[in-house]
Length: 218
Image (cartoon, rainbow, N blue to C red):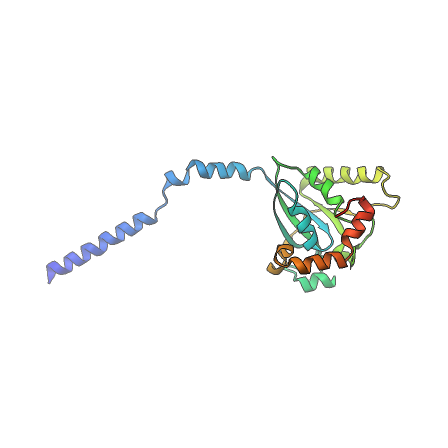
């Protein structure tokens, strides 16, 4: 009985040592070239946040641009924490519907994104974008740091001095504040619900108004 018990204890201890050894990180694998390459690529990623009315449409427009890696629909600029769509759309929180864009700065830059952004919005109408009315749908550019602020202000100034429009540019330039991703069913809405999205976009008069403003047929 004593020998059997000793053998059982020995087997248990041996198994425990093997399990603990398996759980320890392999530093050689952690420092593999693949991981370093990923870190280098990530250093090229930057963020930008744009508000252009309904975030379904803004997300769809930016997803088509070269160098854009991902987009997230969400809420920014308000006072309440973790706002819901119902709260934001009612205008009680002060948030704006917006889209956070992640882009690769080796393929595009903030200036190019701004050039594309202007042609996806109505920059002349305050507190409204197309059929969506209220400050929660106003157009805005949110900047990360002084560099983006300078570029955004220069881009807006260039549009103002181009004399393309006789009305003032209503699009605001604001510092980035807390960004709250919208509910999951809003993300990639134009992909998940293509028919409903197409109906909404047309019935809202978005593309018709954009063609009037920019002379581009969408």
